[in-house]
Length: 453
Image (cartoon, rainbow, N blue to C red):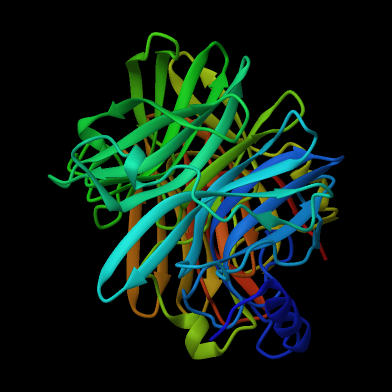
C-alpha cells in the first residue's frame, strides 16, 4: 500500500461511523477511527495544546505507523486535525515515536524515528519534520541522527523515540537505545539549531532492562526527571506487567560536564494498562499523558469491531514531594462531572463518572455488571485494585501503606483511573452494559459522586 497523509485523512472521513461506539470514551482522548498507541510530540504551541500520536487509521491493530494529530485549549476537549506524518519517504516503513519543540524560527519541529524493515533487517534513524502553521508538516529527507552517530556497541535496530527539550541555548534530545549485549540505555544528543546534532553522553541504569524506549527528560522542582518505558525489566522492586514497566528517575544532571547521578527510581503507575508516557509544559505546570493500554492486551475491541482502539490517560499534574514523583489528575477535570448521584450497594452508576471516596482498612468498593468489573479496597494498609473480565481477575497492590486513603476514581466507558495520593492505578475494561451497578460499598465514605450525563 502506498501511504500518504491525504489518503489517511480520506479514509478517516469515510469511516467515522463504521464500527461500534459503545466503548468510545466520553472524556478520555481517542482517535476518530483506527488504532493508537504512544502519545507523541506533546507541546503548547500557537495558543493550543497539541497531541500527536502513533496511529494506524486503517485497522484496529498496530500497523505501519503514522502520526495522528489533535489540538485543545484545555486538554479535555479536542479538535482532530489532519494526519501529520505518514510513512511515505524513501526507506520508511513507519514513522515511530518522538517529540516536538518550538524552534527559534517560530516553527513547530517534530523529531521522529524513521523505521525501515526489509528482509528481516530493521534500521532506525532519527528524522525531522517542520511546520509553519502547526498543522501541515514537511519532512527533511535525510536523517538528522543516523547510524553513524550511534556510540560503539549499540544496535541500529533498537534506536528510537527522540524527544527534545530546550535547556539554555541548546536543544537536548534523549533517544531510547539498546546495546549489542541487550541492555537498555538512553542516549543524549544536542543541537544549537535543530540542523546539526552531536552525541553527548549515555545514561545507563540496571533498571533499564533490555530497552528503555519513549524517554522523556524535563526539569521539575529543582531536579531533572527522566521517564521511560522499559522492556524486560529485571527488578522486582519496580512495578511491571510481564517485564514491561514505566519508571521515573529523579536525577542531578550536569549537561555541560556530561555527568549524572540518580537520586531515586520509582514506578509511574501500579495498574495493568499504562505505557509510553510523555510530558509537556502546561503553563507553569508539568503535565503528563500516557497510552492507557499495554502490549498483548485483551483482543475485545477486535471481537466487538469497535470504531477505534486505544485511549490516553487523563492529563496528570506532576510534582516532587522530596524525591518522590507525585501525579494528580488535571485539576480542571473534576468540573466535567456535574450531575450528582447517590452511591450505595445496588445503585446504578453511569459509566462516565467521578467518585471520591475515603477508604480505610477493610474497605471495598466494587462496581460493574454480569460478574465483571472493578474492586477497590484496602488490605493490610495497602490499597489494591481487582479487575474482573472474561473469567480473569487481575489484582494490583500498591507499595504505600496508610491508615486511610482519599481515593479519586475516574471511570469512563472503557477504562478506570484511580488516584490514591502518591499512587495511580490505570486499567482498561470492556464491560458490555449501559450502566454499572455498585456491588459493594463497605468501610468507605463517599465524598462526591457525579457523572457527565
